[in-house]
Image (cartoon, rainbow, N blue to C red):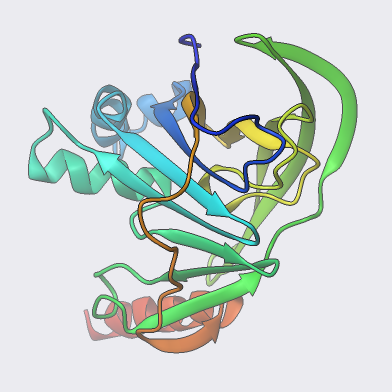
Length: 234
């Protein structure tokens, strides 16, 4: 990982209640997907385009926001494709142990739904450590589950969190660990911290209000039903 740039704009980390963390993004190669006649080419293009993405996590007290901030050098089609692969097309908010985000444009009109689900805290903590820059990070594992018309799918999640930075936030809608997540791998997606700034936020974090509030699984069910209706029509 590139050397993390640490900017201390308050007296000490301990007294700071807000920060901005910048993450880069990469997609790990998967031989099976690359050789697929259906998505191999798309997956290969996503791997190449991922290096152009950067994301920003901002947090203060009990609320955080994670969003894409960098797409330089990418065509519109590649932007859409690789953002979709990151599963972070829309900003993700965490407040009071609940994850919020709007739906992207696609099956439904953009922002039709406000998806709210309990923050995933089903972490298995381990004693395995590794150095990320000069920080000692500990490994925690979990999974995210997708249930749709094709079945139930379990995808592995690996987080490397740093107890030296005692903030229970992280990228891509993950948190709830006893330390800031500096690296997160969700299946073959990897978010890595490259810059940490402890400073007052430029503006307050405001939760989204647009859309019909709905639980994550109920939203997945609606997406599945919409696809089935489209399939029946064709």
